[in-house]
Image 1 (cartoon, rainbow, N blue to C red):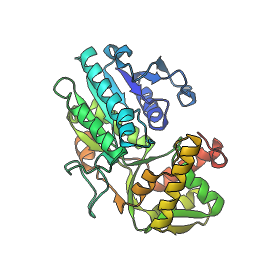
Image 2 (tube, rainbow, N blue to C red):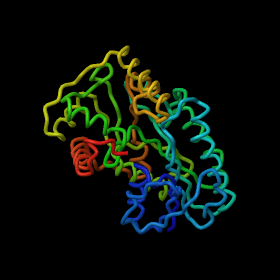
Image 3 (cartoon, rainbow, N blue to C red):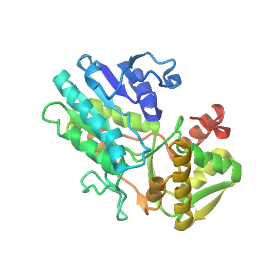
Image 4 (cartoon, one colour):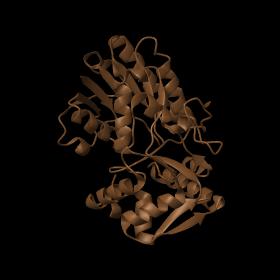
Length: 329
């Protein structure tokens, strides 16, 4: 089996590349000339220099599967999100269908954001009508629809991860640093708010199954490792760091102010910020939860990383690679 992975130099993509190599898959990794390649070091992968701007130039006719992981999570406008995520996805899936009508699978890694926040106590499943928030969520749903529009020509599947964490994650590291330095876990709103998490290794397994199980053709799947309150996440983080931590509840007004400061810093420096208007808007939602029962039932998916183990592993990786005291990215 031969597979092409987009976004393979990133957090999720590099975990997927590891999973494919463990299966003996001949793995082609799409990289840019400026890509940092350290997370692919030691893996028996073939690096393909190219761009999603010109997918027709990629070796799509050579591969059995395409795993489209690449995506942009920080933009300023809805139009920019569409241009960065939905349009490249459409171009890639259409190019794959033209170049390789015998393709065995095109897997698109989307997001729970494509469905939107959970409106009720029960976690979302794949039958729920999507109601994404503007911007990132809306563009991920648009990309999903572009992929599904090609399902009569090639076998496609969609994976919707919730919040992803684990070694190499550039987003959760801020939470770990704050906890270590200040002995605080900032929580916007109630610590009883729920969040579904997926460890990057569990997500890689779910993506692999979506690419190889016949039942996945034409389907959309959530994959997760566990659903937790922020109080439970804080406790697991405390144990991982070996420190007694206190939850700091942030009122919505203060959180929104932090988001506006992030936007100002973004404007002044030109660098995308983790704390931004969109991130605060998302964090103000009462819950982001999903059920992966369909993936368990149809694909045989079973998460292997519990929260305590996953947090310990992540904290250890951050410490060993110097991320707890530096930017890390």
